[in-house]
Image (cartoon, rainbow, N blue to C red; front, top):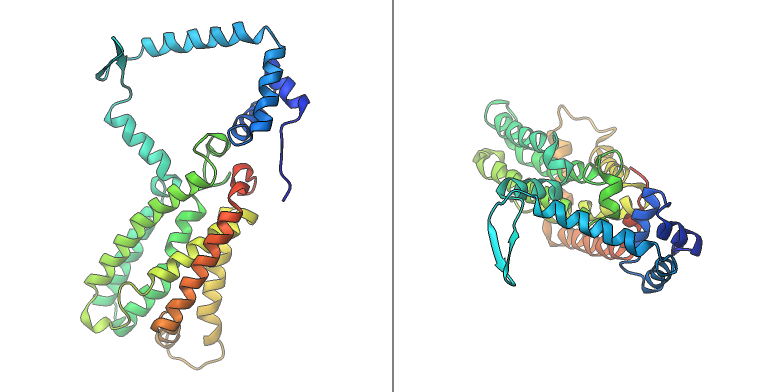
Length: 298
């Protein structure tokens, strides 16, 4: 993998204040983890004596702006009063920003509708014993839709800023993925719990390891193709694994293909395969962690 470093020309433009915003963001993100480039940029700044007064002016302007902020609660320290801002509304905003576009968009509503639809069809739609296999097959791919819109140019309007911010990259993507799972797991588990006893099928936790493995596979593949394409590819492969074996068979409905798909979840052997796949994808994701710092794909 090619490792990018700050050249003398870019360091000079950054010190002179003429670097493009995207180049400056990339430089600032990179020097956080590269001591050699940080030293090169610092040397370029020191060579330009006019940069010091400029920085002092920026510092003075920032302090003046902070002092003019409304008081939300004093915090005493070192003989002066510091302003704490923002309040609860601002903290909620930061949580929603960290949670990502999935929880702010239509994905959360779609997740709830799918869970409610499974319950309604189980009680009044005549699904009967196919209700649990249907939910079992659909549940692992539902988080993929949330992950697909959590990171990337097409899913996040602030992508260029978030990827170059200190908390951006894989760290932010994992936070948003955890938020997606924190919503999906309770909703689907609750739907499973209220299904009628006649629905049959495996237990409510049978989909958790497959869901985790598919989510990690989407993240790992997303480091190459982009999050949306990675999630779509994993979902398409799963749909093929469920539907292709039913091609050419004579069935009067979708009950038999769903029941046949349950074998992917049943028993310690199947669950062990999913666990191994999750560990492998997690390892690949760790190796590819730097790719999200400059991910240009959707």
